[in-house]
Amino acid sequence: MYLTKEAKEEIFAKHGKGKNDTGTAEGQIALFTARINHLTEHLKQNRKDYNTERSLVKLVGKRRALLDYLTKKDVLRYRAIIKELGLRK
Figure (tube, rainbow, N blue to C red):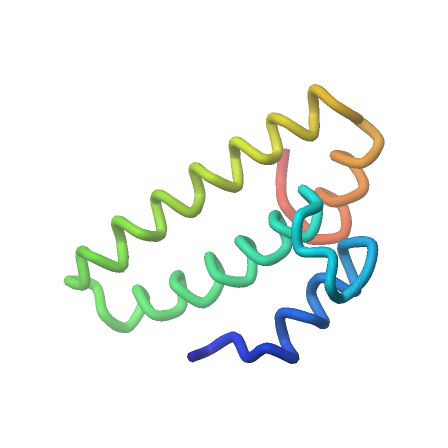
């Protein structure tokens, strides 16, 4: 697997409240972003892999939903995570 347990813990420690706090919106968004970046690189080399393309679209939708949720709950947290991850909008 491309994301080891240690890599996930590092993502959650950096963007969440702690390495075991996997439920925060920021942690989930950061994890989805890492997965999206990995799938994007995979699709650059395997253009006809439609199953991966579908899962990429689903992941982007999930991340968008979490970002929308964060916008409604706390705009400052939303702006912070957008800036940290380098997402546009």
